[in-house]
Length: 243
Figure (cartoon, rainbow, N blue to C red):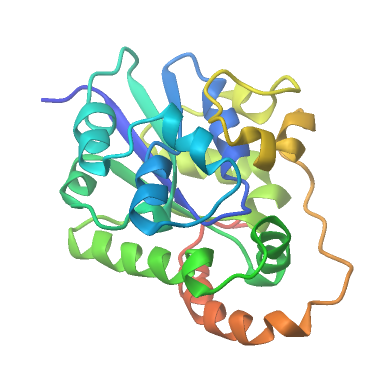
């Protein structure tokens, strides 16, 4: 029987998934891995992302090999925490999902969509990951799992409270060290960190939630309407900062 607790955090883009990876990296019992399926996604989708060539050259780009060799492969520590993007799960088998502990991380599309547009330019529903997250949630429940759902605002409003609940769901002891880290990058960061991780590299922990003050762009209104039902369905299951 596998003695390693393998945790896959399935997030959407422009979320606090990197901060969560940094939080788990503070645990002495945990090894963290940064988006092991990113190269597979870039190869299979043909998406034109910043640092695409560098990313694909830095990692295994066959998702099936990643699943066998890394996600389900040897790990020298009791816990393996993998930061994943839900939309990376394309054109590959999902049998490994039954052998890992799955957690979903979502964010209000009102906050997320303008940030994603700044990073990628023109965006569509497939780029946001909302539908993929909801479909994954339903698939996991069909497998008999009840995956914890994290919501960015709830986590930032009460990091300790939400992380304590998450650790309880994962059957792990809460570690106080998860609430703070040193500024700068980590050796586990993917090569794409130079484009995406500036904010978390400046941080020393989870930043207080600050609602956006600029008006929501009207050009993204139709996309917001597409995303909202998936987000709201997931938020109904989210761990709340105030119970």
